[in-house]
Length: 150
Image 1 (cartoon, rainbow, N blue to C red):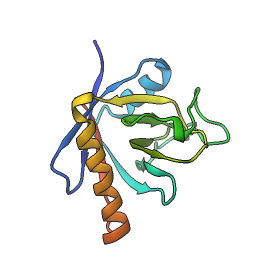
Image 2: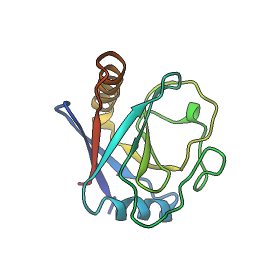
Image 3: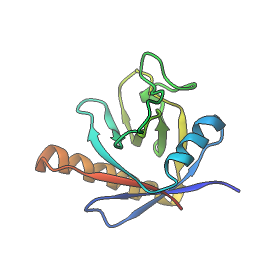
Image 4: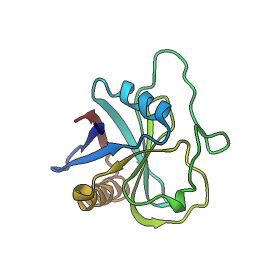
């Protein structure tokens, strides 16, 4: 049975639904374990990358391997090749989110695509990404996203 997750953004009234991708089972399992309890992420939208943002939790108590662009966890895609709805897990409570088609950076993500937003939530996910962009760029206010098991 597919493992389902939800994303809830602060000051945004829609819930986004996604399904874990089992291509890299150890990374999918790691994310699933991390969200045993809802995980609140503090987000930042990159300035020049496009329809892409990153979220970071408080981090684990014990040191954990974290992917980087120089040494990602698992096989990763370039940011510009991520499909809308791609959610990548880089370890240590850090996720990245591709919400639209306008991503220009030819750099690798920190981790593999670990979940995909469900087809019925793609428009709401795009709207949530624009919401995050507007809050951070125009209002200078933070946006959080809570990732939970569905």
